[in-house]
Amino acid sequence: MKSLLLITGGLAFGAMAFAQEKPNIIVILADDLGFSDLGCYGGEVRTPVLDKMARQGVRMTQMYNSARSCPSRANLLTGLYPHQTGLGHMDATRPAWPKGYAGFRSNSDNVTIAEVLKGAGYFTAMSGKWHLGKTANPIQRGFQEYYGLLGGFNSFWNPDVYTRLPKDRAPRQYKEGEFYATNVITDYAIDFINQAHQEEKPLFLYLAYNAAHFPLHAPKEVTDKYMKTYLQGWDKIRDQRWKRIVKMGLLQGKSELSPRGVVPESLFEDETHPLPAWDSLTKEQQTDLARRMAIYAAMIDIMDANIGRVLDTLQKNGELDNTFIMFMSDNGACAEWHEFGFDKQTGTEYHTHVGAELDQMGLPGTYHHYGTGWANVCCTPFTLYKHYAHEGGISTPCIIQWGKQIKHKGSIDHQPAQFSDIMATCIELAGTKYPKEYEGRKIIPTPGVSILPIVRGEEMPDRFIYAEHEGNRMVRKGDWKLVSANFRGDEWELYNIKEDRTEQHNLIKEYPEMARELENAYFEWADRSDVLYFPKVWNTYNKGRRKDFKEYKDK
Image (cartoon, rainbow, N blue to C red; front, top):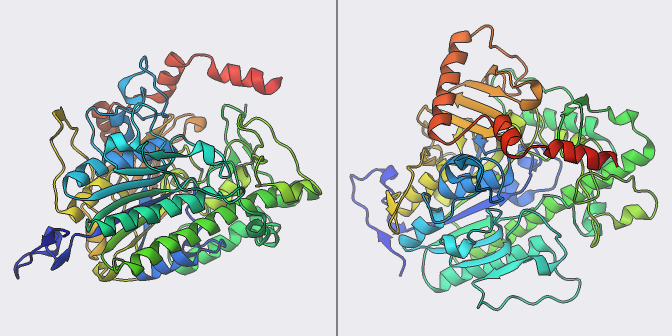
């Protein structure tokens, strides 16, 4: 039988002393989802399941990720900032690089939620995208069952790029043309839910969809539903989202919609330039770009329906009310690399599709991304995108559902939190402790705190929250945020987030003492967390890469 937690009259809610079984815990992570893509966050994509979860749970508006895929995943699973695990940059193994950027340190000084909860009697399973490098797979890091994509991105149509572990497990069989990754990842998630139920163990499930990361793949009939919507163009869609966001009360203060964004200087773009107005594009460009965004919307639509299958399974097993569920995205929407997206894995080639080509977009054998213009929409109302520490890069929609334990159902919570808090939250839910040592290894203390006060309708403690990726960096405390973007010259900007969530009014000249306090806190954190000034790291250990890309692009 699952372990029961006994209750006595004087024990507080925070001690997790409920006259019921330990809760199941399911963490659902979407990939490259923008802040306002979901219906319950102002979007036009059909997401009835997640919208219902929001009505029955709580929406957080200021949950921060770590700006990019694998840093966020390391952050989430270990409760440490990504540099503390070696993933300050990306998942490749770089032994010559500084400690914070050398690649994920498996079986070293960190521990995963799965490892901790497995020791607390949980059945631990993962279905979906791993993206934490090749030095260890999910089974080696505490998960008892796994199915999914070990790398960062690949076809949604090809079963050969997905892996079932442990290796002695018989994989599911699908007929020719039946495989679609989002559906199959959910099939396995349901298998794991049922397995835990049959074994009468509490479940920890990490359900990490690769939707809606490029390549943009979806069945034609679902994509077709969205074409009329996105032919309106990114300017009209963004304005519509903004009006819904304001009406929903998703922002505090007197925030303004950020202006139409820019295409930042990057490996593939020599100079920063403004995004064009939709009406300035040719009809062929508009149709091609609308098709790209329609595929993206279809991927979210399908993911939402599959989350519904997960909830139905829990309901059938009589476990829905006793399952703590979090839904989030690993970073802001992906603006790579310019307004027209790309059509090759290299990210360097673009083709305007016309005529019969349009119907083939998103189907097997294709490779598309939607580009910066639509990313600007997906991050509405914020500034910038994935990679950056401005709100568009690190703000995720976050929905928490937990049956009757949600004090204010349908509420919106504006308190800041960070992915490092998820470890602490799971530990409190499981009634266990974060280890000082694990299998003889000393473990770095987690900086995170439990976010269960938000479930209880209480205040979170005031603290510093940090982020750094590719030199884009920020520190947040209370209402104040100090932030810098590398392509803007690495200059600090200061914002009162409560009053100016979209970061339109830089107050650094008006409040220099606040800026100095935050800057000092940032560099103290950087010193103790293996965070360096990234352009220096990049230039020292990866000389010539941008030059090489430019030569490739110019060929």
